[in-house]
Image 1 (cartoon, rainbow, N blue to C red):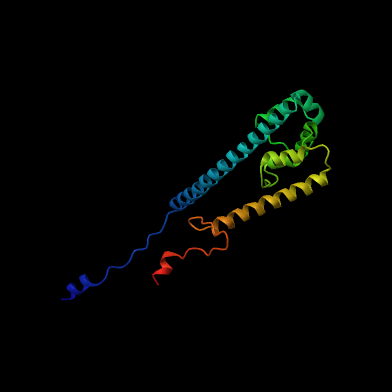
Image 2: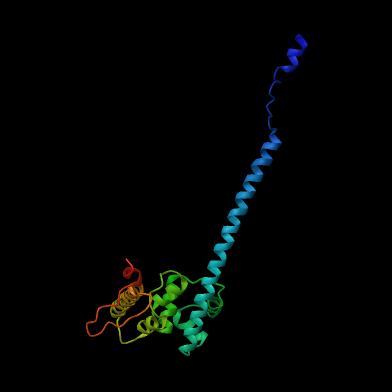
Length: 192
């Protein structure tokens, strides 16, 4: 009988203790996972930076072509080397704000437009061609350009808001209620 009770008694629990090698392997695995996550994040951000670089470079090239300025001429007026400017245009280099300002002066355009292309400033609302025309008008001072751009953005936002409100207020069908005629009753209200 005593033997039978001992068999029914719960077995003692055995705690598993990690060896130092297992502990280190687990830590290494955890660090590798974190490094892989960070590497993916860095790669995604690098792609975004590369896209911005090529975008600003293409914009500079387009503006230079439109102004009929050679690469060498723009490099000289901006105070940078030919190879450096070429690399900027091809998206291989990301220019600083100071270099962008010098390039803008060389192209006789607003530095703000280059800053937007480079992601330094937020884009303005409205038609990009209108914004570019205001910025490139040599007859306006920087202050006048800023005021005009602010007014233009305000009008664009108000127009968009008015269109949104008009669309929300418009019924499913449009009816003309001229000459003081009351609107036709709604079908669901007639049966009530």
